Length: 425
Image (cartoon, rainbow, N blue to C red):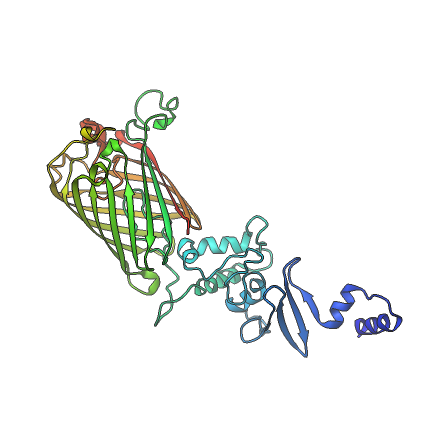
């Protein structure tokens, strides 16, 4: 009443009223500094007015927190409407005008964990998003996190499972994770293997940067999502490991996030050495994975390679890439990933060859382990391995045949390498 009388007096005297009094008299409040959303209160109801989209939405029916009975916590949907809808929109689709994230984007939902979402809600993101840790309880943050998970597009006929591990990369180190991609997504995969020098054995390892101060085998690939289940891939490794080009197609048949008991993908590929001119190898992979809660996942990858070649060194000239006989082989890759932090995972894998190993010169299964940093659309893995191969057929080989040194596939033969993955579209 006081604000209304002040406004009436200012109008009668022809002078400007105080901004706060005007806002109170008109039932207007501002949500967050420069945010273009205004809340208008009239006749016991509240309305969201978006000055950018020129839209007005009544804050009811779950769009705003209803009054709770004493001792009853608001739901995740109500918490979202009260604290997040202003910046991310009532449906969570984000606001390009202020650069807020689209929480319904499936790439975001697949590339982040529940723990990471909760951490961002609690601690904020360095000025772009405020921290709510002082405002919301741990229980409320957990409820809000669960609601954010429901904003991703659910499959027809059912809800998405929420307690599912989100792989950060297409590979653990070389073993595939079977991670699905979005339709029309473009992903770049880059791998470096410093296979000529060991990391932990020998003298003056620090002086040689633990093997980094040496020649690297660099591979580059591009993956494209034809649909959200079907993807194609082209991958190329360097001349000193046969100069192969690998062409691949993958299809995701089952996904845990769609309610399946496990993830199941099929990949078929063909490799041709010397830039796809000779020594062709055909591969068929079955990729099974199972989440152990939202923080870990276990992988089994049986792989058949037809006309596989022994892993040996090549050279810069085509004549230096040897012509070797084809050998049919079968391997069973086993791996695991465990999130020790919301965006940091430990990864490990071993790839024993159960058929064709003797002809390929493999007498010890290659193994790798490392640490992976994953953020939205991006992952970096620093690891150690005994296999310089990154294509499907070459990953089961070891540096023992590659260097012609029988002991190079033992733990003392571990070398350093890294993977870099980035979704550019």
